[in-house]
Image 1 (cartoon, rainbow, N blue to C red):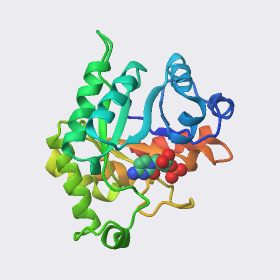
Image 2 (image 1 turned 45 degrees about the vertical axis):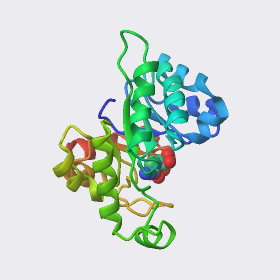
Image 3 (image 1 turned 90 degrees about the horizontal axis):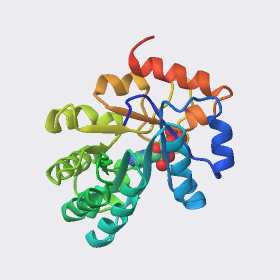
Length: 236
Ligand code: C5P
């Protein structure tokens, strides 16, 4: 998956998505989430791949190992670049996901990278303690899931910028640290709680940033993308 900022295409239809993408030339990474995928199905992925986009299919699978394995076998056939599961599904489920991807990857093609979602970036400390009944801090929980993900053989995790450096220390530089919750200093945080700027993400050791509304909701999305890319790459 390219290391340029990954744009979260949280649109309601293919029409709106490709209208938005007219300003871009295909040589970047995009993320297709549940809304767009459930609306449009596999054809949205095929069209994006045809236009030269790297695709992160963000469906966050979480089910029994056998079901996840079969589903991953299907997703690997789409030729996506990056997919994910919830680390809370357990080590066996994550291993099964990898097996499914290996099985479904067409001969001669590269297996899609697989990452585990640790704690969602909209989750706060209170939810971890009171709703999930986990007797640990949010950071400890994220760290624990990251270690489990690594042990299962996955390529990395989704985490917030705030946990990226501690994960880098334990799991290494090459281990993907894909960080959503990215905002420019002057922007709104929307429903995200653990937010950070592109520059903070770079300094913390994130390998990829996922940016949605800070780009898709901008008056000039291409300019917002360039601004975020420059800040991410340390060019401003
Ligand atoms: O608009 P915004 O930049 O907040 O979009 C972030 C994107 O990243 C959304 O598509 C959201 O579903 C996704 N995401 C997230 N936190 C995670 C995993 C994915 O915000 N832990």
